[in-house]
Image (cartoon, rainbow, N blue to C red; front, side, top):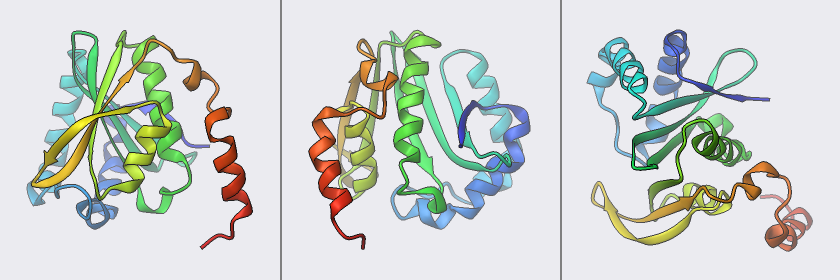
Length: 187
């Protein structure tokens, strides 16, 4: 089972491999990081760790049992009890609930370990997977936004009630939908 880990110096090689392997996949839904990101990766990684040490950002990786990075889940610009959530999951791990589980876990960490009371997030309208993850993890839409020239939606999540995060297997409001999905043929 993949686990969420706070970013460390020794994650660099696996994280770089993750970013290279998924570059084209990510560029289809978010702006490409550009060649300089990869050329200057070691310096960028060190800068992220230094920023994390200030307590204003919390960078996480989702790592499998072999140490391979399957995703990133980040909380940035933490101030006044709130931070911005961002995440990306490897193409080969997408569609299996990994993002939902990791976002739930980071929401719980945000409240219990980092002392945050709320999170913000945004995604483009054409990123249906991300919109589903945010909705399933308790984020509510607050309005329209333009992200890199594309229409999107801004979301917020109050971390005051973590009940839905402590028992991620129980979602009474989705039981009927889940039964329909399990009965429907897979595409």
